[in-house]
Image (cartoon, rainbow, N blue to C red; front, side):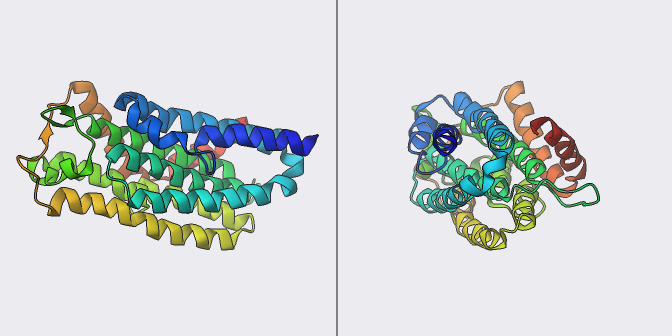
Length: 287
C-alpha cells in the first residue's frame, strides 16, 4: 500500500513540475497561453509543485527513501536529457523556454535525490536550501525572459518564432543583452545566479553520495548550453529577415520587472551568500 501510494503521489507531483515522462503538456501550454500567464506558470507553479514534492517525499515518505530514490534518479536523468536535446530543435521561443523548464526540472531533481539534510557543524549546502535557491533564481530569470518576449513584435503583434528575433541586438541592444543575460543564467555560466543554483543542487547531490549523477548533470548542462548560445548568436550575429523585429515601448511595470530580474540574476551570481543562508533557514519550515 505504501509503494502504491508513493507511486501515485509521485505521478501527480512530477506531472505538476513537468518532469519526464509526464512533461508533454508543458510545451503546448507554454506556447498557447498568454505570455504573462506562461511566466507565472514557469515561476510560481513550478515552485509550488516542488515545495509540495519536498514536503510529501521528505516528510511523509522520508522513511522509505530507499524505495523511491532510484526511480527519481532515473526520472531526473531522463528529464535533463530530454529537455536539453529537444530544445535544440525548437523554432519558437516559448516552446524553447518550455523544454528549458523541463531540463531545469531535471536539474532540480538531481538536488532532490541527494536527500542531504546536513549537520549542525557542516557548512555544506543541503538539498532543501539548494532547491529553494535554484527555484528563486530560475523564477526571477524566467519572469524577466518572458517579460522581454512580450515586447518583441511584428506586424501581427507579439512574435515568438526564432527567425523573427534575428537582428534584435541591432534593433535594441539593451533588450537583447538582457535576454542574453537570462539565457546565460539558464545555461549556468559563472557570475550569474544560474551558475550558483546548479552548483548548489550538484553539491547537495554530491554530499548525498550521488557523484556520478553530478557528472551526468554537468555533461547535460554543457549540451543544454548550445541552444541558449544559439539564441544569442541569432540576436547579435544574424542578419534580420526583412525589416527585422519591432520592439514595443515597455510600460513602467514591465521595465521594473526586467530590471529587477536582471539585477537579481547578476547579484545572486556574485553575492549568493545571504539568499543561500535565508534558504537554509526556510528549509526548516519544509521539514
